Length: 274
Image (cartoon, rainbow, N blue to C red; front, side, top):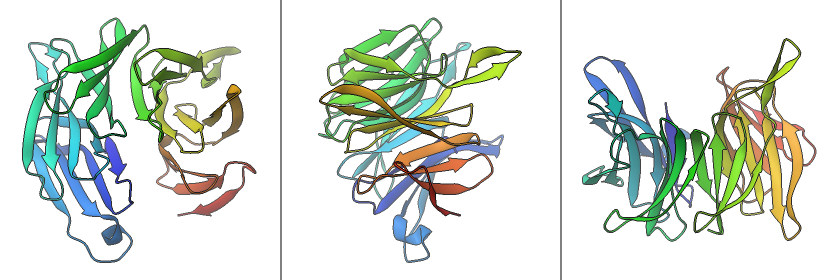
């Protein structure tokens, strides 16, 4: 599993990633949420010619966009492809950044008229926003660090970006201008602090932003009229995926032990685990 997304109305889930089969590069799976909770539904899946690294459902739930690892001429020349939901019929395939483009994350803007990809070159990370209709770049931002993840805010006013090293989280406005750079994800090794990669980021409609680090912690920040302020810190195990609820002050995360936990953000207490 490399990527996962859920539709805005919570009715549809898409999962993408590689397969442990030398003859199959990867797979995209879509299914109704009801099927995953014991109800009715019909899973659909397709194999891909290259390994998916992330996938994202459009705001109206009609399209899934997927980034693919495309190794050509001894370098990554990654692609982005789109399929219809739920049939997974191919719609288009596009290049991301020409030569030496290693893509790790994708998310749609709130209008559904564009998508944003976080990708890396040998000496920098790049956030590129593309027009849906023609695939042209509308804006981009280059930064010195490698990018691991990204997510648009519910209001569409900013993009939150996770960094591999130095384990921090960046905030960009809707035109690609950097607003803030925060985070403390790190290990202690021989008395020295060693930065830990950010593995995933999430944003809620209430202004909370969260990052999960390879150090096993969740850092939560709040953006409001007074600016960006530290909110809380949770977690003890390596966290693979995180999501913040838009309906209450809770956060869910899946850890390396195969456990999903839901925590109350304000009190830090665990609500449910399975």
